[in-house]
Length: 369
Image (cartoon, rainbow, N blue to C red):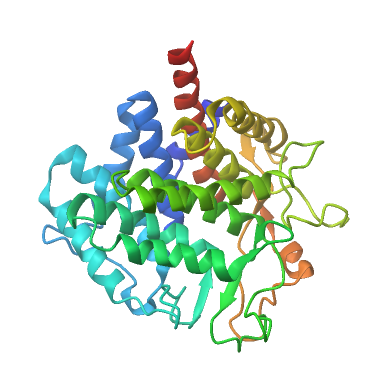
């Protein structure tokens, strides 16, 4: 059923937006990992076909929205490392350099973190760590002699320092370093609640950055692993006992309008399985747990469409953010008011990624037996 759904989704896929965007990057990441897990050439072809109209011979990325200074733009650039490795075509290396050029231009908060977008100045959202940091780390490891490892670690340290709630063991969605946004607490700069997908983005940011860094930089590696372990144990304590999944507003199980949300649950499954496989967390303790979250996702959210007999992945939060201005206030009511949709790339992409991790995890289990 899972494979049938993924095949159908990819066969019908059209670009999420006309420009270089993070949503397509999620689907491409899923295809890369399925290719690595299965060796099936159709996933490699999907990636290279997608990239063909975007990448010029000089490395320019067509329709790269540089003027937005959006950290989201760099998620799609992660796939360029795969394309370069697979084809040895220098245009992909040049496109990586093109992306890094724009990353160095990204404005920062007073604390040194990349801002989320030009329209969100002085703001750090958990989403942004996923969009840029694994890409930044892979570049530093592969091409830049690890010169900016400390910059990457510093940005994670700041998020841990300012955005983690020590009582609830959860991360807030956003932080305004200027403490002037309408959604931000005037003393802490924090948004008001714990949005599941933002925490999911952050967990993937951590484990993918860990995966892309050199363990020779042991102190840095150990520090990121410690931050990940704390974050994963925090979120797992909020797992719904009945469904095996996680709620849109993580700590509000009793709210009648709350629901178990698909994209964030898929991200947690992915992060747990990958971290167990990499032994960032205990394989014996967590491997089956991560696989069970994915199996619950398949059971609860992969269903036949009401319109036809096609399989769809339901209960994906279409979008959520903070601001600008008085918009999107970060309240519980706000997060629960955003539309729930099916087959959105922000949900299906991580679902594909999680499925690939489950395939790799099953292979690892066989090797250990």
